[in-house]
Amino acid sequence: MGILSRASYVIRSKVNALLNRAEDPTETLDYSYEQMRDELQDVKRGIADLTTQKKRLEMQKRRLEENVDKHNEQAREAVRQDRDDLARRALEKKKAKMTQIEELEGQIADLQNTQDSLVEKKETLQQRIEEFRTRKETIKARHEAAEASARVSEAMTGAGDEMEDVGRAIERAEERTNDMEARATAMDELQETGVFDDAMSDKDQLDRELDEVRSKGEVDAELDTLKSEMGKETAESEPDAGTEGEEDVEFETDTGEDVDVDVDETEVEAELEDIKSEET
Image (cartoon, rainbow, N blue to C red; front, side):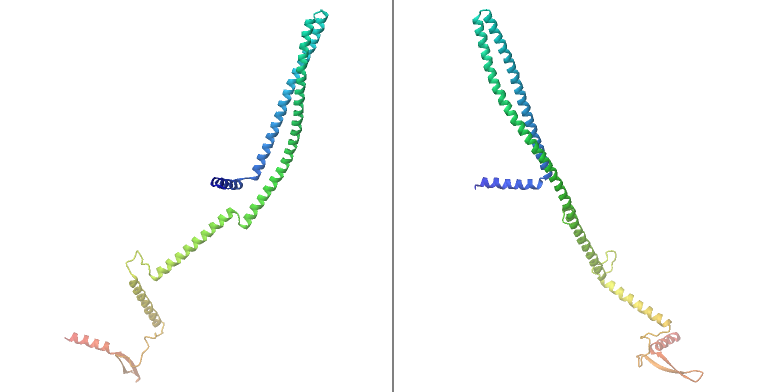
């Protein structure tokens, strides 16, 4: 197989595949039915033309037959007049007309045979067209039912082109939603950890950590104060034995009981310094 032959074969196969995909069986059947009806109309026109031609020949034959009778009468009249020459001429014309009549009869017979054959073919073709129409409608009904059933099945199973597009759209939407949720979670985590500095604030990560520690210390101090107001001593306010800078001083009350008082030496020294400075 040469290059051109192979190329032609490939092109024909491609075109045939495209036509198969684009072909609608119902439209093809309707087109074939119309083609058959057109052929039937052509046969009917052919029969009409043949009949017209045959009628024309029959009319010509009748005129010739009338001429034959006329020439025969002329010959008789010439014999009565003792004009054999005129009788002979009349008989010669009669003979020529009869010859033409025989030829016309042969042509008319041929046209009649052709007409009979065409009429028979027309009836056969018309019967086939009726059968084809019945079968066409049956096939069309089956095709439409199968197509509707296929569409319903595809819609129920999600195998159709439209449902496939819808499924892909849902998948893409879910993927984008998951990406956005993951991105939002990542941004929140990075914001909490301070990886991203606030664009509206001039504080860096160290400043924020110090603020956090300071805030926590203020909360702890407020908690200790609250506990003191409620009569609960904190662990830090409990006296420790042998605390540096403090000593126990005993005072005697009016009742004669001894009371231990914790005195901070640094505070005492500070008060002494204040007294000295006032004296000077």
